[in-house]
Image (tube, rainbow over the protein chains, first blue to last red):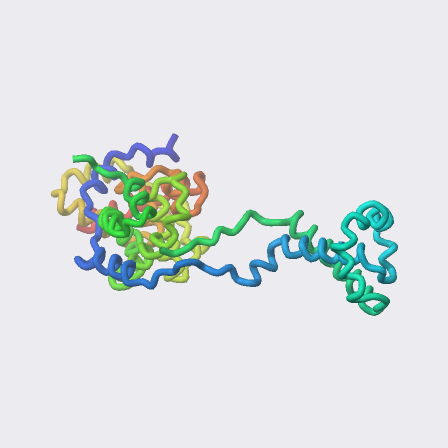
Length: 144
Length: 186
């Protein structure tokens, strides 16, 4: 096939074989090694904050903490949270002493209930979004 | 004496023996430099870019997954660095139209070349290569001189395998045309 002629072109193969490669200056390798050896060593790269926010875990954690807080509180509107009755009836008595500290913090503070519900819903949605549409992990390299 | 391959050196560098990297540089510097030089056409720039290529490769060595050859990975870094330095994008590569290629016999060019001294043959090839667009010069050199496979060239340049084949076919024809013209002029 004419289009594949280039695969078996002995003339060009021989001509190219006798060509020499270009060479950089004599101190080329030395310069590179000097730059590598004198470069400040980076022990570890701290994960930038925006990358932490891009992870789904902070939103999952925020959701769980807010949910737990609302489940154990007497704030208005929280009765609409599915499963709160079951949780209050079956689980809360066992952990009563653990969560009892939450209640006095915001007891009867109706104004705080709405932002908390928004945080609960928002963190749930953002967490789901991150989880469902997450991209392959970005590898963070550590320079030597 | 046992000849160490690239993976041996990479293993040593990753385990803390930084000096082993000098062997990798020494082994690949000519080809990296030649690749970059073919694209940027300036020795000083090519040397500076080639040094950056080796530094970048060193810093990214832990991400090299050894699925491909180290040389292919390194040449890809070199190719991309040279292209981005010259602000040239792959899509801007000059395509050689079939219509500009005139009819001539490759056998005739071959016979004429054989009648020349080796030095003259090399000179004609060198001049003909200079007349090609930089990337075309690089592609055909990788294929015939460095004996890279079409798949390797595809990895290095980011072009598809079929695109590499088509380009090599066209570049070869163009090269013959240039060599033919140079022989006739001399």
